Image (cartoon, rainbow, N blue to C red; front, top):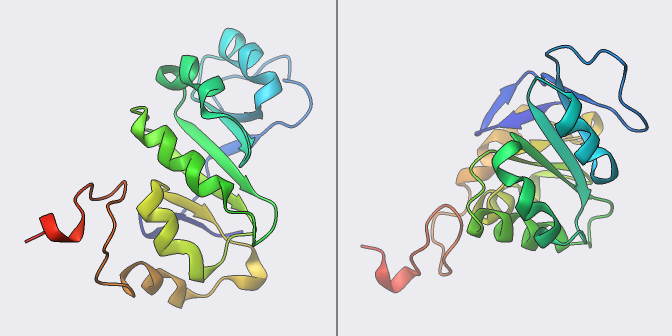
Length: 157
């Protein structure tokens, strides 16, 4: 599945570990579900990431933000927009690492995801096209403030 990182196609260097940590994690970039996060942070020397569903409370992540390099937010179905709010709350809390959308990600949501604070998206192979990179610039006027520009339109000049 293609990874779009900062509006460009990138290689995914992260390895998702779903059930239990390997005995020797080495220096690999690892992503785990929230249930394994404390264990990962205690044992792993490399970069650490966490995968959470969109309905996850951002408050549970706050104590770990300074030790995380990546937060993946799952979008299980198209009509579930809770991940947008979670990304926005994490950015407001000061998280500066990578916020990545995974799951049901498609071109028509990429611009909105970026406005909420996502800087990376994993798009399923069957939905990906090179033209998806143009989606970020399709909407040129934005009335509301966003993670990328906190000024509403009447403050923009």
